[in-house]
Amino acid sequence: MLDFVWNNEVRTFLSKTQRVIWAVALIGSLGALIALVDLDGVRRPHRILVDTDVDTDDVFALLYLLKQDTTQFDLQAITVNTNGWSDAGHAINHIYDILFMMGRDDVPVGIGGEGGILHNGTILQDVGGYQPIIDQGMSTAGECRYRQAIPVAQRGRLDVNSNYGIRKAFLPQGGRRYTPLQQPTAQQVMIDAISSGPTTVFLMGAHTNFAIFLMNNPHLKKNVKHVYAMGGSIRPNCPKSDGSENSSECSDVGNLYPQNSNPYAEFNMFSDPFAAYKVLHSGIPFTLIPLDATSTIPVTKSFFMEFERRQGTYEAKYCFQALKIIRDSWLSNIFHEQYCMWDSFMVGVALSIMRNSHYHNGENEFAEMRYMNITVVTSNQPYGTLDGSNPLISGYLMPKFNVHKNGVHSGHVQMGMQDHFCLQKGKGLCQDGYTKEDTGDDAVRVLVAVKAKENHDKGSSLVKQFYRNFLHVINSPERTGRFDIRSQYPFHKEVLYKPDFGKRTRGKPTVFDMDMSAGDFLALLYLLKLPVELIDLKVVYVGLDLLGLTSM
Image 1 (spheres, rainbow, N blue to C red):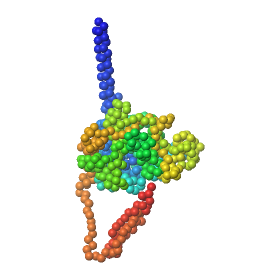
Image 2: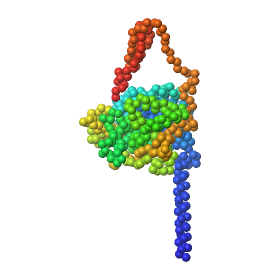
Image 3: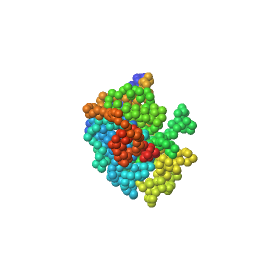
Image 4: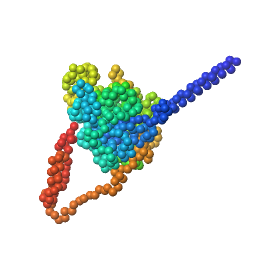
């Protein structure tokens, strides 16, 4: 009798346990659909807004995103960060041409704006974001204290603006073009997109635009579901197996160059540390893909060679051509160790997390994740320093934006890459823009990518899982680019014209060194009009250094 009762109780317990397990499994399987299904039962895609500085790796990321199934991920808008690697007109036309090639002229693009920030901290409408928030006044001009870290000529804005010269040679041209003073502004495009429904934000550059949006539109913060950002660097790169941060082999945390004044910051965070701080501390769920993770997924030689073999779409060809030019013009012989899949990796990780949104630990296909308590350093100790470097407290009885007089924003703010405060005995001390682990009240718990996951196929030459996925997506025949400029204009051809001077006596051989000024162009036209018997123009040399374009 006792055995019978015990067996019945066991069966009842097991039956209840099985029901619980089935219920949990059912909830888990339905969890992935929750983000896509509204209360009315209609399945809807994740709405995404991208804020980008349109560097070449941003282009890879944007094309990767545009290749996704729009029933899952729908790109709502793009805003361009004007405080980074590219200039307004070039950046906007680059994006317009990409969207035209991909058949997405429906995507609004915003940039800049003529608004400003008053002396008392009042933020006007349509602040252009041409300056970091602490320096933004009523003008779009300023000192460019942080932007000094970005080269102007080679490997800087000159190359990025034209995508190393291939943008106009490859991308087709649609009907949208940058029009000064008539362009949709970044702030208005953000307001329109985010006010229309729950939106996930991808930040691929400085956080200036989005921080201004949050400061000026607090009522819309509830519509921002999540922020994913590529940027920052948390821990030193220590190759030793024990990972000791005291290792003599540990490299600097950041990636600025030169690093001699600030070895801690990464470009995106350094471009506007105060903006990054405001976004991080906004209360919006935040996931960071820092250099710690992106440094584990460089463009290896094996990935490059596989990419060269697999160019089945216009977008794949465009990405590879840009990548090849960068490799061929790299200033050292370690391109394959230094150039990483920065923003494209961030987008890949973000989309994978969103697909697996029923997990709460950031589970995804491509990166190992960890929760960390971090903050963004915006000024250097000692706090409360009135040395004229900090526009938030200098000259104010009440500090700007209600920051505390002796708080984390009240110290010395780096003035440029050669700030003497930051250089002592040849060592860089400033930490502006450093995404620093912290245990104090100023820390925020965020999800952080720590390293790229290995490829499931151990025999593949593509050792990381995202290498494989990126090449698969960018070469997919679905949602592919429609044509390039040669297909758009099939009757266009280039003709090399070489004049035949026959037996004519040539004049004095001449080399013309110009700095691209208006006067130099007039002089060049004059030289070309002269008879070849008088002046034989052999070479035109463009000396960018004469304008200071090759200096920091």
